[in-house]
Length: 386
Image (cartoon, rainbow, N blue to C red; front, side, top):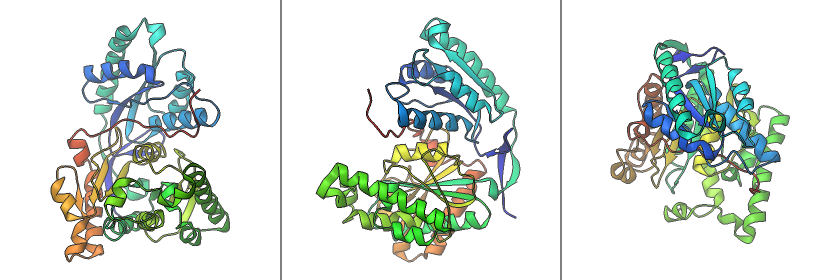
């Protein structure tokens, strides 16, 4: 049985990182979260631009995303920083996060007497939480405890024949080991939904797959009209792609060849093992947030044009689809899948990706982590602000 070295959490989950997260409830608290992070090197601040001006679906969506990010296994403890008058109530977030059994504390800027007083108190709390987290030790655990997120961004014409199918082999490896793999970006399944439907483990799951892709296509047509078939980025076209169908066929091969066991909403934690589809946007940073909130401890991100971004509490492994990109951005890329075009087999490159994932699971840092390219928390929104 293959194992990895991780940190056991009170709820039975296992992290591969040991972060203390500072999570603002609202964008107005980002400054205080930043002061705390600068005062206590080593904490992870999850800045975002929301927390107010939303209702209905978006309010539920953002509450679930923030709460589940605090519950991510890579997070050892959380300090929630609220303003005091926002729509998203810190007390509710804290209560939800505390269900995980990990330490969760909360500060209210208005009650604490302003930003500097709150930041000073927050720095004391964060330093204590960081010290407590540092006492935790890695232990061996089976791979079935791992959830792997899959993402592609800045794809090119080679992505679907090099990096993405090689990642698919890694996805199959983890599923065979009893783990969970999450494939997302619903708009990048348009034109390929029927393939995923055939792979569903049951008629009910197939129906959910069909509904998810159908909704994504409907939204696309409503927004783009006759140009809906071109719902790909300029960089994708510059990289040789012709249509969303071509991009979708390349996207779904990241999920390998196993059965689709479940379809979940954005930022929802799966309750089944195997290959899971998450209904989410194609925008990279929003997708990363959704995967992290769904419990992914590690993410593989394929790119053909080049994208250096990571995520604050989840390591992101970058796989380049071509060697020209890898050579140009070697300091940002973890694996060169472009060697498939130069004589290596997909199986060989798949093994390289698996080896890199295993190294990261045991604590090895990704290029995004080394370069401090952790990015910001970008929350998906379904409706307008008010």
